[in-house]
Length: 326
Image (tube, rainbow, N blue to C red; front, side, top):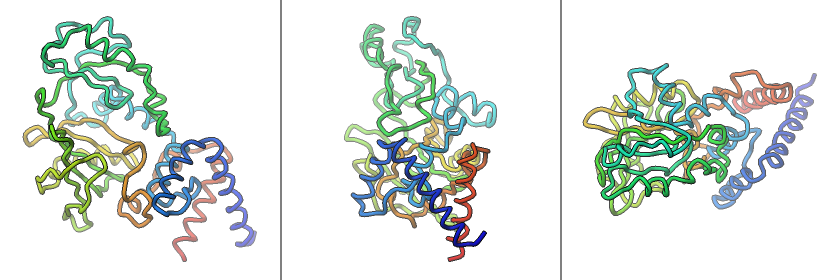
């Protein structure tokens, strides 16, 4: 079989994958297409992911790892950590149920928070002054029917059985803890940040991690922050070590940690950063995060798929090899 024929066959396979993405995941495709047009970048590609947004597109559409579901479930993540990394501290869980009917009133006034395990932004501080059980139930009554995953097509969240739970509160009411967020690609850290919610909004410092082990304060602010935090220090090695343990199990994950004194408590694992869009660098094929993300280490590539996707995987590896030899 000649090289030209193989290239032509590979192009036909890639065209089929792109068509599958446009038809099967039309909303997701157009979400990334709008970002590409805004940045005057190439059309998003499911078959040959190059940019960071391409790789999130690939993860959402094709890389349906069971571990992604586990790590998108805030309760299941704790059990997973206890099994694989029991030395990583997690907030204590006091109560969990699929209904608020059995929520003990004794939690009111305690240093505890009510959350849901499948969504973002669902949180009630149970030591809020004057809070009543009736008010808690009113605020949280629709949490379990929330389709958090739909807005940005975050596949793994859609598979999480929703539950309420109460866990210990990290920090004090009205004073949010300092959070470290560490971006890992395998056991490599490329970016980290400190973020804290304040009365004036969110303050944040972002750091890039160089190959020689040094860190550099990034010149830009993130889209979710209003000002610099001003700590002028990156998360220390003990925080990075926790993140790298979790990161070693995946091709990419953001590990969120609470800083308590000089120690760190696990917050959550984030598989779709900002809904699967890394912001200003999302369409840059040469960004350090983009280059660090090797999708061939993903569950999709590391596990047997059906016959068509196995054919596609072979075509992808041939294409990747040709790119290296150019």
